[in-house]
Image (cartoon, rainbow, N blue to C red; front, side, top):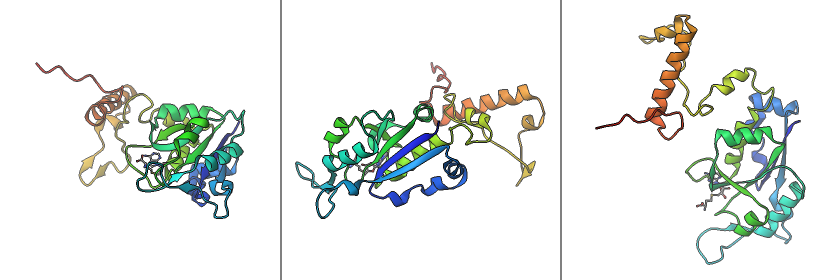
Length: 234
Ligand code: SAH
């Protein structure tokens, strides 16, 4: 079963973009996943192919029209389509590796890319769009966010990554940031590879990596579930 992505956008030329090269690009060519882009503007009904209008209540910027977007969504995702409908949005639930895994295990995703100030609230409700954020910052459009989401999903699809283990031991999979990495040469500008890593003692190596991962998580991301409890200060 292959993962079917439909991306609704005013800039279809941004796709597949970065996803057309390397592992994701090969997987796209071999049919592990598919990518359809839908030009939202094709669903405008007036002569000027208008997709946006001024915000009700006044203020700066423009808002994407509910009626035009709904037609584009109904075309890409007719009733009965089992795929979740996502709207890339800074107001959305922050994307997590757990959600990425769920999406990768499913039939695909319909992804709406916003532009301007955002989209009319009524189409979000009427079409059951799940708002997804890629972080607490503002992009100029949803397209780079959609590329980020798809990149994270596609690398988890069966057969995309050569070494499946490296996917499972990565940051966030166990609530921890990953331990530091080293490779040859043994000495770089006076710095040695930590001795334990060249000891050949796999138990010790695993313990060292675990301890480093816990230390790093505690320092940088105490919010993650793998962070050690704070020592009690009396
Ligand atoms: N006025 C909005 C920002 C609009 S940015 C606000 O203040 O919340 C324009 C579009 O870019 C959004 O509709 C959304 O599709 C996309 N976008 C911007 N930042 C994003 C983020 N952090 N995650 C996902 N999508 C984002």
